[in-house]
Image: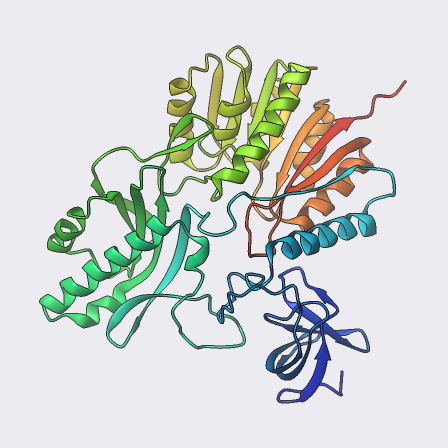
Length: 441
């Protein structure tokens, strides 16, 4: 550790990719993490920051460049750390990371590993994006992620992974806002705009949410200018954690697998419809094979998964903490011709009383939690309720591993683990698991 200090310039060889997709170089097993640095590459690097468990470095000059690189040469890779790596290699390193993580943490032969399913779209796949807004040269711009190691502000370069219509729509919204405040000579008001979230659908219609400073309201005349944008059908603002809708021309509808889903801007929906459809098709296949009586759709959002995989006569119990999402889930289930469903606005982690009403020997529980994963209390409840069949969808391999260990300790068998490349050009992995309770003889 004493050998490593800020400003140190050394030669480094990348040996692997980290959890975040950064290149890893080690000195006496102490990791130095470097952006845009791939296995086998050699470079002269400079140490930027030193911490107890790792350091951050940056490349000064490449001495050997990997043949696995593509020709994009993107400079700002904070949000897309492996975009300069060819897609075949991206999948290889994701498979390697996930499979080795499982091997290190789960008993051998206690699960079946299946290779990651690739996305048909490598670029322009995201239907949703979130940006911090900053003023630069008296213009409101979208900015890159701000890392702990730097306070610089720069325009993002990850537009390549967004739907092209989303990029166009964002550009038009920012242009409209900038032009409005220039026209009334109040450029300083641009500083009141903090964040923007956008979502685009198949018809290239957009919904957006703008976060404002607590002391500022959107001027009515600006709202009228934004209303003139044909593609923008749903606009809300958020101040002090309260959302207010200011434009609504039509309900915002997303389509997946020939079904339609009404969404509010704060509702969760998968950002890559192409790969999401493959995940849901796999879950539907499992449901059809086993013909369960009841489906528990936990962290259900707008009820997309249960609506897509259930047959008309199955009972669906959906739970989510977002009220608007649950209201839309009820509408979506009805519109998609489901007959037997109940959706509850509740914290899944505090839903034991609800779930206990529907205990059955023929239940499929679908768990699609946030990145932090499940709680041990919820896992124990599922076990105590004799729920024997569980689909677990995870966007965080680390929390997934933690939870699978608990399930295995409760005598659940991990039938298979399979990754899906929901987020090409990043190092994130969406993972699908099937767990079944081992019955005692």
